[in-house]
Image (cartoon, rainbow, N blue to C red; front, side):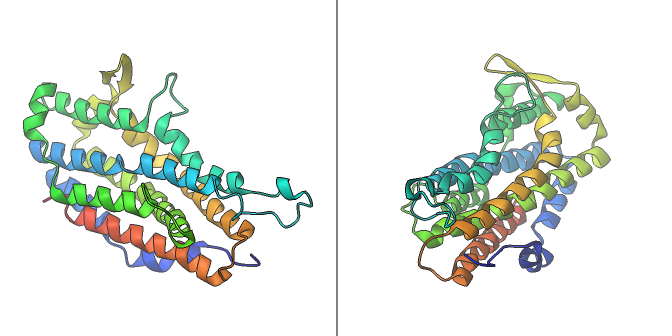
Length: 276
């Protein structure tokens, strides 16, 4: 597809005007000294994050299945020229971690690790697990944001080319902003509640027979998201390179950037209501 590429310069205007992570920091700052509020804020954030693994796995499969859409013009053997799996691999890279963290000795999904963090926080605050049902409040804004994430990834949808490329941009936005989100949460908790961080770092939470460190989910995401973002950018640019459809290159790139902006809107709306 010629010189069509997505660069950081394409993304910076959206990031410069984005204030979702300011709202995230404010929500955790406000909740730091209120145990029930902190449980709800963290619970909402964890629930919001649970929508991404299914969406991303679906997107990677949708891309991999489009052998006719992603082709290598330099490959002389027609049946060997499809590059759909090569494009999909850069998106599936992050999905692997979602369903099996590669740094732990057993299969830890990031959902399980997040559950261990929330249960661990409840224990550190002096609550039995059954008590958390009455303390954690998942607000309507969280449910609405999760639905928008599923839509942004194209989950359970018949994706045309526009929505397929928009989904790639949506995922790219999720990775660049998540890289900041977890750093913010870690920074606020260490500054305002070092007692809780110390307790969670030393705590093991049993889920499905495995012993999971209660702070690992937050700690690992302060570094892994940068790698996932780099893979996502590589993926969208491979998609542009190997695209073999009829849509003009500038329009295909516009689909990707539309998806990126859509995720920024979703994230800002969710973070704006996180403390409600």
